[in-house]
Image (cartoon, rainbow, N blue to C red; front, side, top):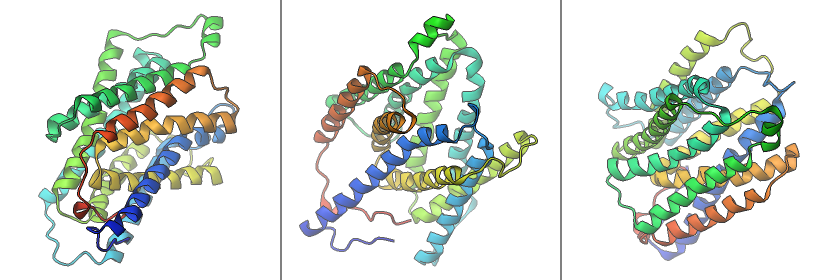
Length: 329
């Protein structure tokens, strides 16, 4: 646990901001490196390990780390836990499980490229739910900044489409009316899960490590059921390598650090982290995988940088006396 003394003083401001900035940069790096690292594990174009076992291990590691952090913090005395306290944490796990299955189901109604482009609408759905469900008001300039994030995501997805290959094979972007409806449902559920999680974490006055423990108990249970129902003949650790374990460790850290954002920051900050990670993804794909960057890549870079400046320059200044304790899980 990192405790910041005298957070109301001006001397505490620079360390607090530096830790917060380091946290955000680390999350951007983890998010952005995820897809390139998975590509490096592929053998003959396919991942050699079971994705369901990988997700289950990630949830289990987060559960173990949260349990150890809770025991180490000594915040167990005086806690009153009931079924009404724990039950709300099942909802995010169910929503994310629903969306994970929906992604697979909707592929029959659209091509992957259309999904990649349209899934950027979850930025807009999260912002709308953030303002309506949490009662947060955004200024016109902040809405414009979020619109830039959506545009940056669409441009990034568009620049990644292989149009030459599409012309050669006569394949075109395809989406049915059912596919459009399903992708809108996917974006809505994604935003709802994020906003609901933030609301639960902030309204319950419990240690973050305990809240994470509740979240990941349900996460492990649901993902275990999913793995057992569709694991087939592949062994649990079959195809695992040092790189796969690095991916698992990174995603476990990502989940734990993102809970700090949701508890002490906002879901909008999470959107900026995810959008900024597209740039890291592009650079790593170029440097590690040798994927050629197109001139379109520069446009989302400019949009995201402008959006960050526009959104956070319009936020009211927060008193240092209300600064939070970082990494208190």
